[in-house]
Length: 259
Image (cartoon, rainbow, N blue to C red; front, side, top):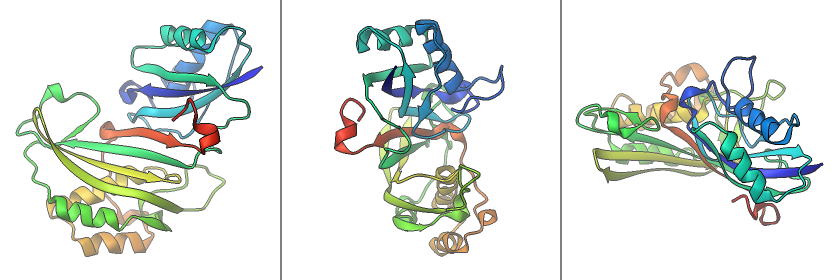
C-alpha cells in the first residue's frame, strides 16, 4: 500500500463542497473517490488540505490517498483524469510516504476575484463575482486589508471548521487587493495567505471590505468589527462564486512534486 499526494483543480459550481455527503449529493471528494475505485478496483478515502464550501473552486487543492498501485505514477494520473468529470482534474501526482495534506501544510492561499463590468456579462464565467457598474475605493480596501496581517482573533469573521476546536486565532501572512484591466472591464482581486482559515472567514472578510469600497463602512467600522469578536457584526458574506483555493505551502522536504 502506497500513499500518493496530488494537486487537484476543480470548478466547484456544481458541487455541494469538497467533503463527501450522503448520496446522491454531489461533492468533490465523492467524485475523486469514485474515479479511484474505477481505476484500481479498490475503495480509497482521500484527505485534503482543506474543505472548500459549496460553490467554491480550487486551482491548488492538495489531497492524499492510499492505494495498491504497481504501475507508474504517470499512468495513475492519466487514468484518474480520464475517469473524472470535466470540471475536476488532477494537476500532478507523486508517491509520498507519510504525507498528510492538512497536518504537513504551512499555509493556505485563497484568491477572490470581482469583476466590475458596465453591465452583467455572461462571458466572464463562473469563477468571478460580478458587480456591474460598481465603483470601489481601492485605497480604502487596501487599508483595511492591511489590518488583517499578523496573528489575531478572527472570531468576527468565522467559526472553527472542526467542532472539537474553539480556537479562532489565525496568522495571516498576505492580505492585499490589486486591480487590473480585463477584456470586459476592471477586475479586482483579493489574495490572502495564512496558516489556516475559519469557516466562511475569507468570504466575510471580502464582504466587509467591499462594504468599505462602496463607502457603506468606514475603516474604523471595519476595525471595530475585528476587535468585537462578534460574528453577528460581519453581516456581508461574499458569494462563493469568486473564491478559489489557489495554493497550499509545505516544507521543502515535502514540497517537491506538490508545490
